[in-house]
Length: 175
Image (tube, rainbow, N blue to C red; front, side):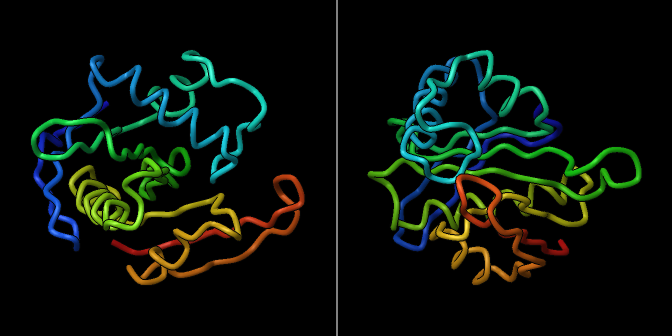
């Protein structure tokens, strides 16, 4: 799952040092809880907010298809503050484009964690042989859209009424 990507220290714009590591078994419970909380809040994933996220559903969505899945914690190895998963966006000849999904825990939002994770994922994608990064289901109301645009992602299109009447946006960036 992790390819050749190992542990890294990244620094947010707020000066917070984060330890980014491939997901290990020790991270599973905390990562599942963080993902389930994001889903329950209806914040950016297609899973139904009123249905509990099981380990099996999480594993098959986030971990199994991933070429890389990472967690981020403060450098002193405190609680999980964010994570991302990355997989090929398509199969065969389309597998050169990566797709990624991110989460930042609510108490760490607005401190540059999301930016640090997206920037880390772009380097990791290149290291894994991907030449572009695409996001397929960015809710139209998702505040991360500003981050993606600031980092040079192009808005490829908007698909209306995809999830509970909300449009989703598709973003793409050549790496």
